[in-house]
Image (cartoon, rainbow, N blue to C red; front, side, top):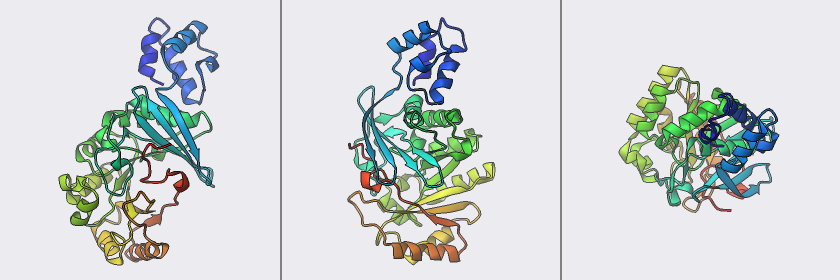
Length: 324
């Protein structure tokens, strides 16, 4: 829902009318007709002039583990994917996209193999979460879908700030970055809300990281980690490190030891991600992941192994490529 457009259409209505519309939408209303305290005249104007969503649902896929992947198209025809993950403890987490495609071409990521279209607007990002909110309550949102959020900071920060209206607190909102420094600096400087930061790291040294993540040539590790430390010092919140496990590439005990030496143990928590096949690499075996984690444990660097969700419908980490 484009609330800016709603306000324009309802310019002759009382000032509170747009707030009422947003309150209904953020609580999961499925249409303007459900907004019973909004005048019939206002609802008619909205139905005629403002689409209820900025996105058109094209396809939904459902995983055996309960994960749902939605493929949308924007009003100008660009593909966008978002994912709802359901967990046994009751959590309902939505992974949203910030761009249609991604220009940064990380080699392990299916999105990086797509053609980049454009940044998404604030309301296009929110409409991904609202789509799932209309079906059931949600309580976590991660900006880890298609695109690099720090390349689209204005829309990403604005969308993140509105998520509490949907029932997602700032402490349950996470924005991920590969380390795009201009946007990351803005996040550290401008976002005072307790929104979590995640860093897509995937290698413990510049040479290897540049091989699998070309952005590292532009913004090397020491600069990125310095900004992450500044986030920790300014906000007092740990940085989550995402580390995808690529068989024979970055998953040896030596890599783990280098990672433990690289990261300040009080600042970071590592999330080891089993590789979800996209055609470029083999995934690390369970044994290699366990051995890698054992090195981090011995070094007292906090780490967990991510539970993979939605792999059978290409909805898992790194698999979003806007295919039905």
